[in-house]
Amino acid sequence: MSLASGHEARLLEGDEFERLTRNFPPYRTGLVRLSPGGWVFPEQYRRYADHLYNFEVRPTDVFLVTYPKVGTTWTQEILWTMIFNPDLDNPKQTVSLEKRSPFIDLDMLFPTEVPPKLEKLMEPALEEFHKVCPGKDPKEGMYWQMGAACKDHPRILKSHLPLSLLPPMLVDVAKVVYVMRNPGDVITSYYHHCSLFNEMKFTGTLEDFSELFLNDDLVYSPYWLHVKEAWEKRTHPNMHILCFEDMKSDITGELQKLNEFLGTRLDEKQLENVKKHTTFDAMKNRKTIFDFDISETSKFVDAEVLKKDGGFFRQGKTGDGKKK
Image 1 (cartoon, one colour):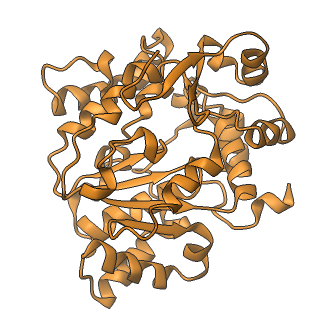
Image 2 (cartoon, rainbow, N blue to C red):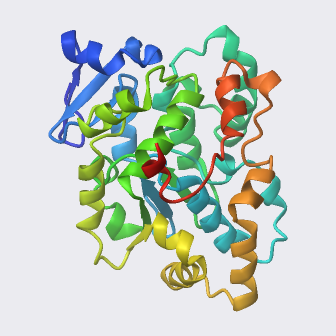
């Protein structure tokens, strides 16, 4: 299948399909690999690929682009707080993070037809979709359509896609924040994430997961090409690259750099507000961001993994990969 980006999407079969899905039961519904690049995605990606590549970008937009599990949620909350809530008085701060800054490629991680066991859990998302996108069909993709319909100025939009699969003029038109992280820590964090959520439900060991990562066989891989595409744009005035490790060691300094890049003109008190509001403990304790009640979400996440990890926010540390 030919895509608007110029890539070919090939449905995986045979030994390659068995190798990639052995420990990912939900992905046995289908995976595709793109060429060039070798990107791996659920087969549903083909339904949304052209919409995402042709997504209309506004000059006021701020896009957060990352490989999964590099500190995306943390950065997402930092950006929204800097732009919309530096005085910590915005009533929307109690609204879930995903409604405030839509994850535009999330649609491909869910089945097109919602299973009956998930219908109740999806009701809030469907209600929000019909509110934001009246008359639109959710089966055409809820999250990219909600991102497109978002009336915020600026819009803060999140994607785990590489730059080559996003709108070709993205960096020339909008501001892009890209986050990098030590790959060893990425592996460990991504492993726990995929073990937690049932739409991925990885059943293998960390060693099995690491092998898939190193062979560019995980969804959203290859990791190094993902980073390379952003790094090549590092001198563009609309591109700002953050390193998770720098954020952990000197968040004040990184917030000051973001303040200049975004043009938010926050004073010292406001930057301190952002810093305190987005600490790991503060975000972990704010249930409005990710409110996982084990009794209600056992069909969406693995309750045992959730309890063992202590929630969606697991550790938020550097060097975690060296301990495994």
